[in-house]
Length: 557
Image (cartoon, rainbow, N blue to C red; front, side, top):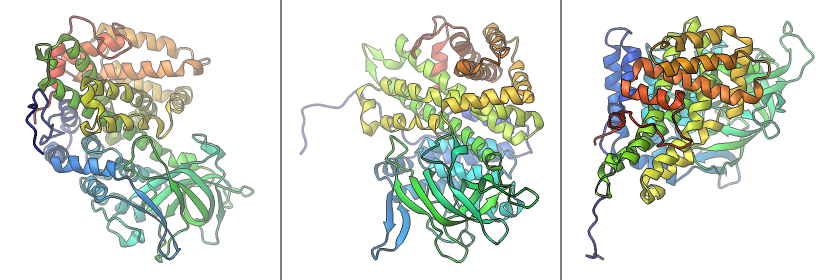
């Protein structure tokens, strides 16, 4: 029934029909910066590919897919109608469309093409803004490659499947599918992040490299995947020379065996999570489950650490994606909403808030893309930098995501607090990346281990920030203060978080001083490094060119 009691005015139009990649200036500039020195045609090819994905991400259709995948979460079917155990997870068609687009856009294929990590990282940031949950299997499939490469035979068999651009859902032998997805199972009830306390047992079979697993995984990410990397204990008593040294070992567990029978993979239930609701996270029981060993016995953590590092970088990129989408929505709303006599975006206090949010978003993007470029370069110094910079960035960027998204939501007022705005979904998703692949304390302790055991990692980090030394006195002062803290590593654990925070801010500041517009670098250094900043967003000091910072973040549909 129509009513005529009021006319709707002063509402922002839907932000739809825009190019998520091209309108993201920090991201597009990072792609150009890191790919321009590459082979001829590489940058143009990447831009075309990413702009196509960006236009799809900004379309009304893709936005509906994201809404539907979140509104209709996966459902576990443990048995069929006759009582047979099937352990299948059903998803809404929108989930499959999102995942198909991700795989088809090369988001699981970074390791074997020029500039692959930069291209893939940019695409991950773009497509995650549509819906973040489906990024979990995308990330793990991409990240499984370095772990599998410890076994050339397994890598030759599985890597072409994982890097395929064809997504085919359903449980079948992986060798009969055009592409495959991978999950991971490390966490157990009694240990959490302390995976050395895992109790899942692996008993060697007659065939070399084959085992049977018995035990559980308290968090098994994406249990509908075709294969999983898991950790389990091999009974000791042998020697490496005999082939059975025992200890915590990495294994590949396929969901379906080559003969078409289902592997023993009992999904007990799916987690009812705060956010990330489109993605299935399960509790899994193994009972005589067939597995292939990956790497040597007793060296499971060393084998799987490459996968962990790559997924940690995706935590940075995923957080950057959430920040960027939240910022985009906040600036868009403020550009069209009028209050107290003019557009919100022109009000000095709102401009301060938006500029502060923009700084946080750009710093996260620039840092994440720099680390992706280090993966592509793959030199000795780059690998050393990643060893220290990845947990540093993961700690800080993931930590900053939740308060940043919450502040962006507040910019929309009550409109941002309702589900239709999409902002509550972003806010529920925001804490995930701080927890996934090791919470804040785990990251901070990992940084300390690198500092204490790998001096080449600190050298690489200092060389990276040193490239900007002398360009801003506040950055120079922050580097000096950081070096003072680094001088005492004997009693550092109690202040590890503060040290890692400082290292992250110095690295972000150095990158922005080198590559961002002067207005952005000036505002970042004045607030994050110069100490002229409050405890909440919107407390940037007077005298900065905040209008230019906000204008840089604006998107026109």
